[in-house]
Length: 257
Image 1 (tube, rainbow, N blue to C red):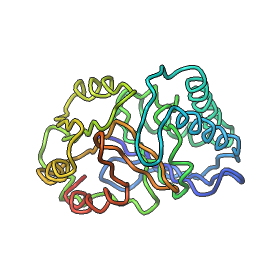
Image 2: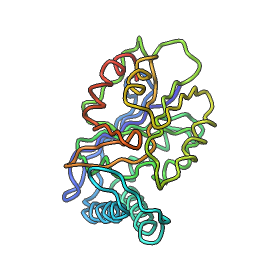
Image 3: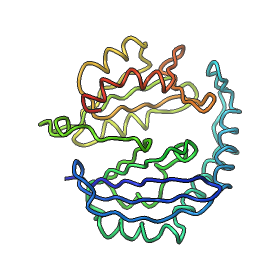
Image 4: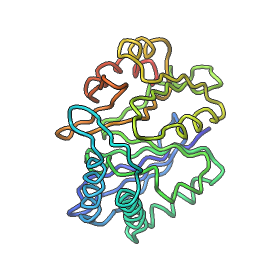
């Protein structure tokens, strides 16, 4: 059975975060719980804003995506790598080391592990957690983010007798970016049944969401933030706000997403 590792973070980058680590078997209550801290890191947020500003300068606008046909490199690559480096240095801080050590003690590197980052801090959720170097030692690790109000689906959903994980992969507007590597990674996942929607019309997306009880919803393509709220571009002309998507997913979540 896969392990579930939950990190609950409460605080801000100016004063630091209180962190609660919970470890247990997926579908069961936590067997281990430990509290620690992450130090203040206001420069990490500043670097994220610099990276976002440089990315947006490629030509995206708030109303429509108009990507200039230029190579994404130079300043963008420098800021992207700098952001990842700063995130990893922050997560290697001494204040956080007792939680890392407990994690290593309780979760073997060959185990399947799902990592859930729970926080109400929107800036924390925008960081590239998938680039956390600590997770590289776990070859069967998945990471996800949620608000503190996250609830696991009921056991009736978790106990469905299925051998494969059902993934709905939405490949949206990709003008100027390469998402083929994302597709190849999904196609090579073991024990997964992946359905791809390539730049789907909104109606097709809605219909497919309701076809079966999906386990994972994946999106690759252009996205943006408007006034602190996310928006994904599902094709060349249509986009969905995260709020609108959340409303459409309510019943799907009840079925096990």
